[in-house]
Amino acid sequence: MAYADQQMSGNRIIAIIIVALIHIALGYALITGLAYNAVQKVVERVTTIDVEEPPPPEPEDEPPPPPEDVPDTAPPPPVAPAPPINIAPAPPPLRTTPTIPPPAPPALTIPPPAPPAPPPPPSRARSASADNLNRWAARIQGDYPSSALRREEQGTVTMRITVGANGRVEGCAVTGSSGSSALDQAACRGMQRYARYNPALNAAGDPIPDTLSQSIRYVLPD
Image (cartoon, rainbow, N blue to C red; front, top):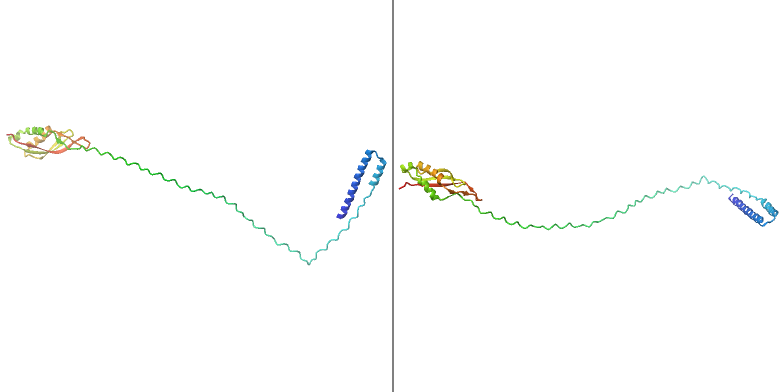
């Protein structure tokens, strides 16, 4: 069938080429003034050509069916797909940080020792002391009680006195009696009236009260 088709197609192509040549010739004849009749005859002769188509080829015999006893070819075994290969991405580059040694500790600066404290000023503390003892003691002894003179009483009176910051006797107590109450009383009274002392001082030199012992001796005049 394919061969007949090819042959038919070849005849058609030849006829088409011939027709094209005739048309070209006609055109040329018309242009050059050839006789119209000659052209007409050629056209009639060419156009009346019968193109016989070849008979169709006989159908080819179909191949005999395969015998039933022959088993079909076994299908190929299934091919399992290859397992996927996990390609791990390249790990990121490791960045190493250089180890920087710790900074050196700052130099220990030891301040110079503080200058020694100046020594404290010398203490000015002192006890009370009699001021012009002989003068005021004579005045106390001269103030002899008249009752003691009449009874001819004499003796030494020992007293515990308190000297104030002003240097005067502010308190008096008999600690050793002369044997005469008149003389004892006259002695304390005379101490508070006539006695004068340099007042006691503390370490800073300020006057402070002080307590001390004092004696007065009474002697009968000749």
